[in-house]
Image 1 (cartoon, rainbow, N blue to C red):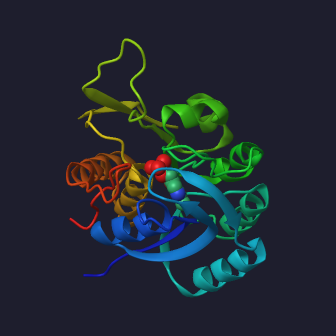
Image 2: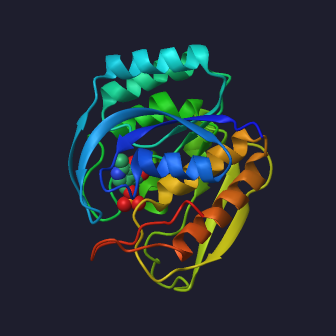
Length: 253
Ligand code: PLP
């Protein structure tokens, strides 16, 4: 079987719960093959993020150009960007390869706490990367600084999946989660899943990479999202707890 190539761009989480390692596992488990560009090295312990240092944007640009010239990348998945300079660099790659669909998980903060982005990155995401994105996957907290679903769609982003796995809002069901997919064209759709009992590290990376791989396999956005959500739920049901901290998705199902 031919495995489509998915280029995962994001940060390295040494704990292995999130970031590039999560991407590689989720892409492989969904039938793709991962190529990777590491934007930043982070200090994390599976509980929270402490700090990060970016990789030289020029080096990432050179790596990206080499890969994209030679490999028939089917989909680009972007996670942690980190800095405005890296956002500008990634925009140059997306401009040169504008025919490749992009799935962007707007990583700003670690779920367990700690910034994974410079404060100004929100502007670069909104102005440079999201207008060139096929599908973005913010949770409800991440959506607020990004300005909401409508402005994202108006900027050029083709579809927005707002995930509902952050803490339940007051008055909201505590045993179900709702994920809302809004495409630029066509009707919005809500996916309902059970709310699981733990806090998980790397579920957003897992979901975005699974969806990216399903798109790379040729599925349309709604079914890629539906299957990506099903896969992610399974990885969380089988999650392990390697420290006293958060649970880690088990992606190699
Ligand atoms: N570390 C890196 C490098 C990431 O890319 C991400 C999320 O995408 C995280 C940590 C945060 O993962 P979580 O919010 O699930 O803890």
